[in-house]
Length: 360
Image (cartoon, rainbow, N blue to C red):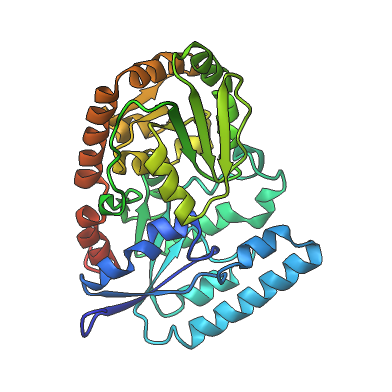
C-alpha cells in the first residue's frame, strides 16, 4: 500500500505486465516504490494472454487484437490515468508507427522514458523480421527521449545513444532481488547441469556455442545435462538435453538445478546494448555464469563467473567449474554479493523514486 500523498505515476509499454522487460524494469518494483512515496499504476498495452494470442493469430486476428488493446489503453489513460502526475514509458507504447498512443500517455504529464535495449535498431540488425523498421521504433525513441523530463538507460552504452536526444540521462541497470532466489548449494552430483533461461529469440545464441559445449561434454568424466527453459534446445552430442516452456515456476526450478549458467551472445550492435539480465539472475541464485564478453557483460559478471572473449575458451572454463564444486560455490557467493551491492532494488529504489517524483 502506498503512503498517503504518494505521487501517482502511470507505467506503460507495448507489452504485458508479465513480459520480461516490463516485468523486470517496472512491474516488480511497485511495492518497493510505494515505500518511497510513489504509487505506480500499471497500464501496459496488453492484458495477460493477449501477446501470445497476437503472436499466434493471422493477419486479421492480429489487427483486431491490437485495435482492441489500443482502444482500451486510450480509455484507461483518459479515465484511470486522470490525476497521475507523471508517466513512465518503457521502450514505447504502441506497435504501430503512429505516435498517437505515446502522445496520449504523455499529455499533461511529466514523462520519464526507460530503455533497456538498443530498440532503435531493427530488422536484420536485431535478428528480427526484415520489415521491423516499418514500426518506426527509431523515430519513437527520438520523440520520447526528446520530450522526457528524465531518461533512464539500462547501461552506459544505451545512455550514450539516448543522450543525443535527452539532456537528463541516468543509468539504472536491470535489477534482481537476491531474496527471491535461494542460493544454490554446490555439490558434485551424478550429472553436471548446464542451464540456460531465456526466450525463443535469444535461444538462437545457444547454437553459437554448440560446438564448444559438444567438446566439453565429450571430454567430461561425468554425464552432462543441458537444461533449456524458454526456447528451443540445440542437440549437443555427448550431452542429455532437457527443454521446458518458460513459466515463473519452471524458471525457479531450473535455477535450483543448475551448476553453471550459460549466457552466449554474438557480438553485434544489438547485443552490445543488452543489460546482462540473464547473468544477473544466475549470480543472484549463487550460480556462476559462463558468458561471452559482449557489451557490459564482463563488467557485470566481475569475479562472479567467466566472461570470455571467444567460444574457443568455453570448454576450459566449463571444465574448471565442473571439476571443482568449491570454485562454483566461491564464484556463486561472489556473484550474489555483487548483485546485492550493485544490482538489487534496495540499491536503486531511492534513485528511481526520486526520478519519478521529479526530484532529479
